[in-house]
Length: 122
Figure 1: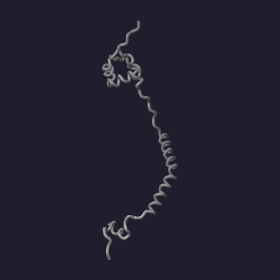
Figure 2: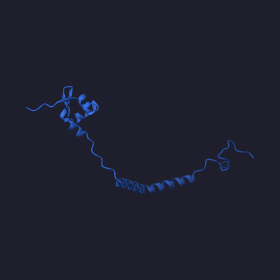
Figure 3: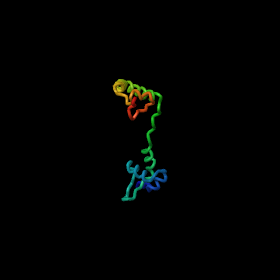
Figure 4: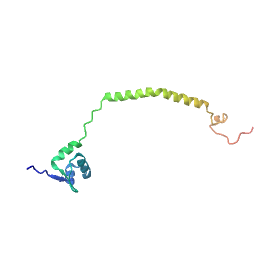
């Protein structure tokens, strides 16, 4: 006869692990570690270590200088590709600026930008 595993309530298991009960229930169900007898949900005590291992985040690769250099080179190449369109945009801006009329009359431009409401009579 096999030994019957000790089943913990969600509250007991959550308390042991120091995590919220609802989160533990969700993760235990997703990973197949939840035992349900109708509405009563239990987690086998001997499976807690396995549950922890399944939830462990993979180690991140250390950042290196070469990654930063590659990213900088990639951004420089995109800037080089964008250069012709920037030059076209600047040329269009200059052309439109030259063809537009000023909003101030030539005589009032010297008077600190004040536009007279009525034409001056001489």
